Length: 82
Image (cartoon, rainbow, N blue to C red; front, side):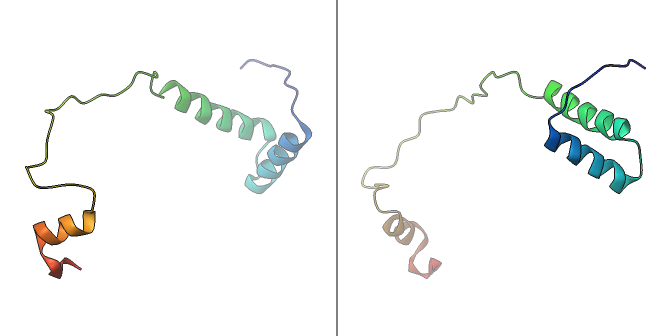
């Protein structure tokens, strides 16, 4: 186990102490658990590359417009859809 000196903001220190007291464990155990969880989650995070799906370009059939969605749904599904 490695020892390090870490300076915490007062509010973070208070939250750490409160959590340690709630769990009934030492503050360093809570800090290790929280840091481990955050650092592992960040290492599993996406690399920033965009996810792109390339598909065919779809067009609406002639006479169909997407300007009035209610009218389009009435036309395709019927007025009883409501």
